Image: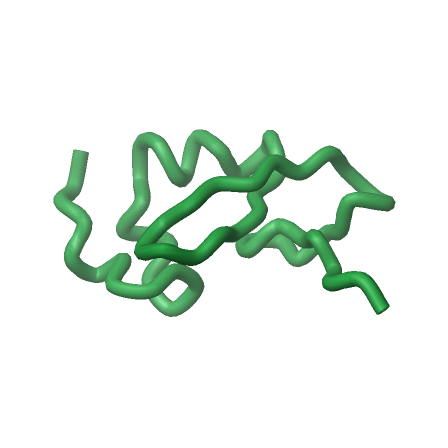
Length: 59
């Protein structure tokens, strides 16, 4: 069975919305277009969703 490709924020999978893969700490994650701005501008909002997100500096 294939691994679900779902946005790490909203949990929508690739059958509901486009998702893109990104790499961080030798792992990969998926994120949808709606939440890419969070990743870019407010990554501290990903605490609990992305490892070590609490270490990101506020933009």
